[in-house]
Image (cartoon, rainbow, N blue to C red; front, top):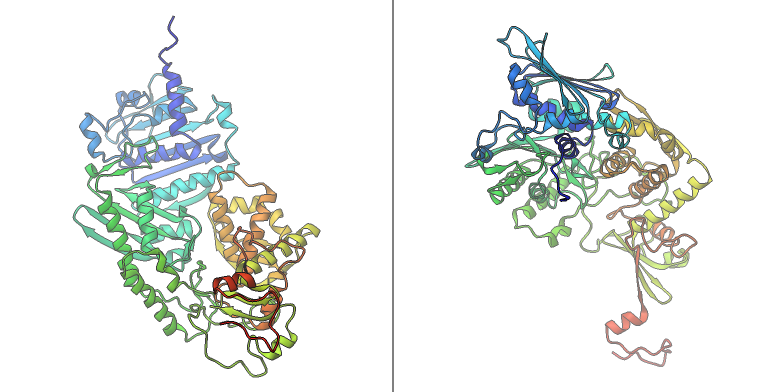
Amino acid sequence: MGVIRKLDPHLVNQIAAGEVIERPASVVKELIENALDAEASRLEIDVEEGGRKLIRVTDDGVGMEAEDLALAVASHATSKLLTSDDLDHITTFGFRGEALPSIGSVSQMTVTTRRAEAVEGHSVRVEGGCIEPVRVAGAAPGTSIEVRNLFYSIPARRKFLKADATELGHIVDVVARTALAYPQVAIRLRHNGRLVHDLPHGQSLRDRVSTFYGRDMAESLIEIRHDSAGCGLWGLIAAPSQTRTSTRWQFLYINGRYIRDRSLLHAVREAYRGLVEINRQPVVFLFLTVPHDAVDVNVHPTKIEVRLRHAQQVYHEVLTTLREKLLGTDLTPHVGQNLASPGGYAADGEAGGGDREQRIRQSLADFLRAPPAGSNQSRFAYSPPSRGTGASLGSPSPAGETLRRPADTQWPDREPPAGQSAPGSAADRDTAAPVARAFQLHNTYLVAETEDGMIIVDQHALHERVLYEELRARLSAGPLESQRLLIPAVVDVTETEMAFLNQHREALARLGVEFEAFGSRSVGVQAFPSMLGQRAQPERVLRDLLDWMAENPVQPAVEDLLDELLHRMACRAAVKAGDVLSQDEMQALLSHRGGDQPSATCPHGRPTSLMLTRDEIERSFKRNYPTSRPTEDETIPF
């Protein structure tokens, strides 16, 4: 007897549901797309218990007749395709006829609908894939789809759902992606009866960015618009000073459909080449319009991946449009502007530095006009602000520190301040221990003579390691001592991020981090570890941590969270490439090498120092020194 048999239709729908319905947010996405295909201008979304108990999406679209309703919940039935030729120019979100049958196979689903011209509405119920007869029901024009007890028939799937707040966060992400692309559609979202978002129709894209991602972000965005044969592009892009650590802040749409495309994401990164720091990502909200027959959306059941017929042309349009806009925009930040990027300028810099900073930006513009060449980026890399000349590396930065400037490309020809010896002077050699003749190379590396040769130290990497080990040692002895901030550092957050912070409030308190909610969409950091002084930039540490959390597919354990935050605190508080250090500061930093704590690498694994022995130096110059130093009567062979 044969072993191959045809699968039961109910099992087929459950398998299909595994591809399409991953979590409650997937249901919301499919139902919203159905409503938009039905020409809805208003959406009411009600969710209970993160979508486990209830998901209901009500629209004012065209509705369905009774015979259409019966087919709508059947597998592979759709009004959006007639022939295979229609696949070449799909203009709707749905076309597979899989969404409603898949949802109905893993939940208790009820669909109620009425056309505007009809006297009565109709309803159908689907439970675990079993379709009940269509019946007459009272209904307003449009369609309401109610999904209860998601995954009730698949306990293994249900137990993998996250906390209600986490699932709600994913639902909000789906709503946000829709709201950005369809500002003409009014959207109201409620969770457990509480209003989460109420978006009126007719808002601008900037208004909706402000709603979901904060006013500061929205106000800093730059508008772009470009039309060419076969491709239109418009949207909002952030200045290079507004960056994040992940690409989740890069929103790409093709013909109104949210997509993820590696080629287009690369075009965005290339447009910002040289303007943002390595490993930082620009923020963009881009909308492309291409002929429907030039894009294939039939790639994956979720329809997020697409194929473009003229991919190179679209890539070029995105790259050149963004680059030209950046070149033609004054990117000089204003004093007091909230800068989120480590590649930007310090917000508390002195006034009057705009001309110098503009020249730096012009250098970047000149660089961008040249063909892409990653090897030249370092010529125009930004440097952080000078930290002053105090001897204590852990002391707070002085008020009114200067704007950051590029690292020097040659030794500055200047006299030391009165009362201070030049690095490597006789006064320093007499007092500096344990390393003599230390000096800075390009305000980034420390070079010092040792008994066996010389050592070159990455000042940021070593200081980061020192701070990390000190933070970890203090944490092992008890909670870190915190210092109240005079003015809370405000960070805009999403619902998911707010839930994450509340969930880990006690763990953050162990690190000396205290915060309070400022409304439903922002938090204020009110205290931070006192040992870090003003260097750590609390709002940026917290933002980096939230971005890291969003990229982590698994909810981190408390200890992993603490360790990650220690890494980021140490990185933010450490001296940076470009910081000018005094001789005392150099000696203090170099003294931490070779102690009880590990210092060979920074917490990220980069080496902190490079040692060159005297023998290696002599071999490089092909010298033949004797093993002992020459006496006064001996000469050194040249």
